Image 1: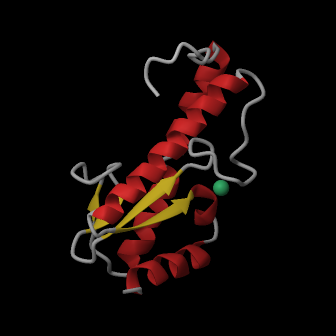
Image 2 (image 1 turned 180 degrees about the horizontal axis):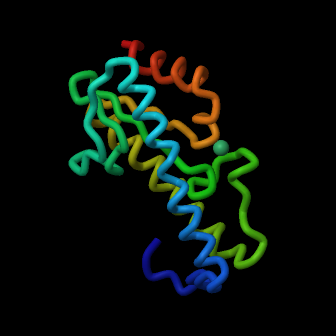
Length: 141
Ligand SMILES: [Zn+2]
């Protein structure tokens, strides 16, 4: 991966501003997930740096980890996960490397005996469904 001469073009100023905006709103889904978990009496750790990918939410006793992914940044196959039309090469490379890293992190957790769940931003819009999904993951042995 490193040492490639096909470095993608950096984004324009306009795109950079959009990126910053996206990143800020990006944290909201994680807050929602944490709220649902707390409401259901679950205790967890946040951003555990000792685990692959620094999972957003970790249940160390259960050996389970949750990643909350923004649909844009992690290129989800939903309508929020679209590739911008300008600087396409940059974005495709960026999304590819994000996706690859996500896969590696989940695999890394697995080798440590952890199970991982990815919650997509678009899956946090319906709180009833989100709660069901989280409970299913945590109650599953
Ligand atoms: Zn999505």
